[in-house]
Image (cartoon, rainbow, N blue to C red; front, side):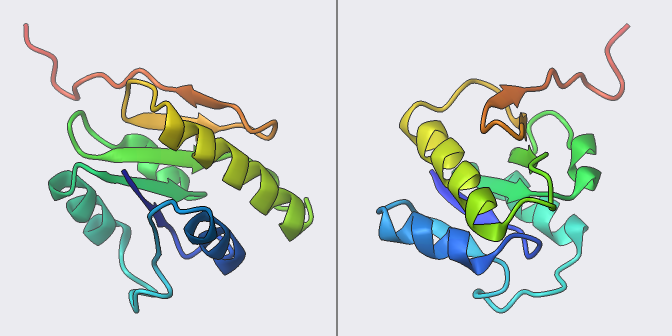
Length: 124
């Protein structure tokens, strides 16, 4: 499992994950700042090992089978250090014991909860 951190997350989180031995890539350090969400979705669709952490609610519309996404609901009003701690602890636990599913919310208390994703066009 590898984490991909969207550009709306601090680089401190990336450094903390890497320092703890977790595979992490940050959109900014990989030279992809400004990469459209559609391109990130395409990457998730072909790279089954990749888990995106983002604050972008556009990813709520991800379809069945198109990657793993964790949407952070941690308030931006918290100090960066506290947000990094919450995200780090949550992702460490996620990596150690990945829950089933592909779309998750990361709640302000650090809990990660799964969504039920239904096909856009269910069979008749």
